[in-house]
Length: 221
Image 1 (cartoon, rainbow, N blue to C red):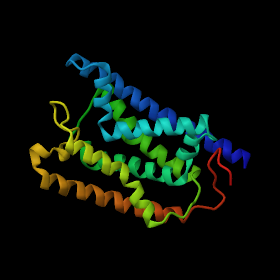
Image 2: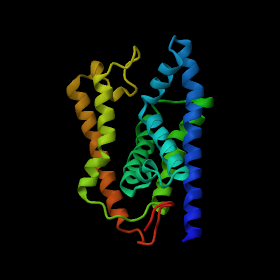
Image 3: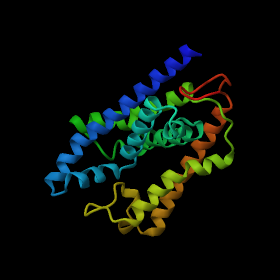
C-alpha cells in the first residue's frame, strides 16, 4: 500500500504541476494584454479566471496542492474526497471535449497562447482523468451525486449570463445573451447540461469497474 500511495501522490503532484503551468502560461498572455487595455492587475486576473477552462484548471492546481501538502487538513480531506474529485473530473473532461470538438477551430491560436491552450485544454484535463482512474477510489456514487457535480458549471453559466463581461462581452460566444437572446442561450446551456449529464453517467458507470483496493494518498481506509 505504501508503494501505491507514493505512486498516486506522484501522479497528483504531476497533474498539479501541469495545471499550475497552464494557468501561469495563460496569465503571462492575458494579464499584460488586459493591463495594456487599462485593466488593473487584479481585474486582469479576474478576467482570465472568467474562462471556465482557466478557472477549473486553477481549481485543480489548488485542490491537488492542498491534498498533497496538507492531506489531513479539512480542505485536504475535502479535495481528496472521491465525490469531489469525480465532480472535478467531469468538468475537466468536458473542457477537453468541448474545446476539441467545437472551439479549437473557432479560436485558432499561436505562440505562447497555443502552448497555454495545449496545457489547459488537453494535457491537464486528460492528466486529471488519469489521476481519477488510478488514484481516486471506488465509492459507488448515486444519481444524486450527479446533481452535486453540476452545481459548479451551473453556477458558472448563471454568473456569466447575469454579469456583463466588461466591454468585450461574455467569455464564450454561446453564452452571449445580448447577441443571441435569453431563449437561445438557455437552449445552448441545455445542450451543455446534456453533455455534462451523459459524461457524469459514464463516470458513475466507470466507477463501478474500479477495484475496491484503490486508495487516495492521505485518506484512511
